[in-house]
Image 1: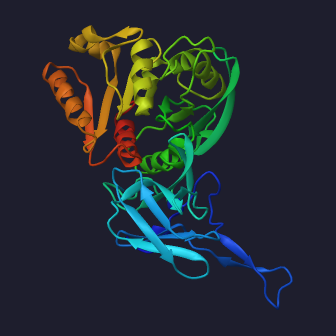
Image 2: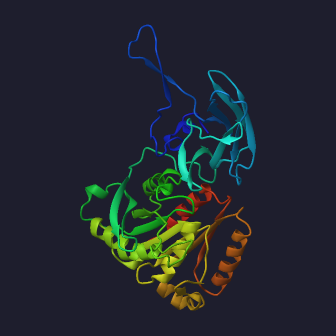
Image 3: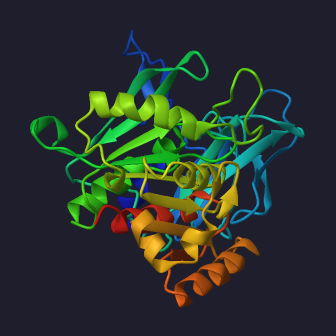
Length: 382
C-alpha cells in the first residue's frame, strides 16, 4: 500500500481525536511561545505489512510488551529501549485488519497514550489497523460526499432513564427536505457500546463509500446501547430487552424526528455477536415492526423467549410473506459456528427458503463484521 494510503485518517481517528494531535511542546531560543515536535504513533504503519510499536516508557520501566487479543494477532512482542524515551519493536507477522491489543510495563497492563482507544471488552482499549483485507479501501476516508453522524437523546419508559443513540444520515439529507429514508437499527457486540460501529466499525465511511459507488440504497443508520435491562430484574439477564426499548421508545422517536419511511419493509435490525442475538430476537419477536434482519457472528435461532418461527422457515410462502431479507454471516475462522450456520442455511435453501448466508476470511473481529455489514446493506431495501 502506498505511503499516502497508510496515512489515511481512518487508521488514526478515534473518540479522543480525529486529526493528528500526537505532538509535543518544545522550547527554543527564538520562540517565547514554543513549537511542536511530532511524536511517534504507538502503532506506526511501515508498509508491506510491517508495524513498529512505540511506547513512551515511564521511569523504572524494565520490560515492555504488547500482546494481541488472539484471532488475527495471537502473539506477544517485546519492545526495547530506542531513543528520546521511546521503546520500540517491529513486527512483520501480524495479519492485515483490525486489532485490539494490550501493553504491559513490568507485567502491569498500561494504556499506550500514542495509540487510538476504543471501548471493547468492557474497558477502554488500544487498537490499530493493518492495511489490507478483502477490500482494503472499504472503510477508508475518501474524497466522496459524506453523511452526518449525530447523537440524539430520547426517554425510555422501560428503564425510566434518558438514552442516547448515534444516528447516521446520508449525504444530502439536510439538503432534500422532502425525501424520506428507510432505517437500519445496527447493534454492537458484548463488551462494546453504541459508538463501536462508528469508531471501530467505521460504518459512516463504509456507507459513504458504498453510496458514492451506487452499491447501496440511501438509508438512516441508528446505533443504540445494547444494555437494556428492566429495573425489576425480569427479562433476559444477559441480553436484556432491547427490542422492547426499540419498538416502544426509540423507533417512535426516530420516526418523529427524522424523515423515515415508517413501514416494516423499510426497517431493519442487524448486529454483531451479542447484537446479532438481539437482532434475531428483536425481528422474530416483532414481525409487525421489522421485515429485515442481519445476524453477524451471533445466534441464529428459530425459537426463543417470545418467538417461534419454525413454521415460517419450513414454508417458503410464509417466509416470503414474513421477511424481505434474512442475512446470516460469520468469519471462516469462527469455527465451528461458521460451518454449522452454513450447513443449516444450505438445508433451508434446498427447501426453497431464501435465507442468505455470507462468510469471509476472518475471526470474531471487526474485519468480519465490516464485510458482513457491507454485503448486508448491498442487499437491503432493494
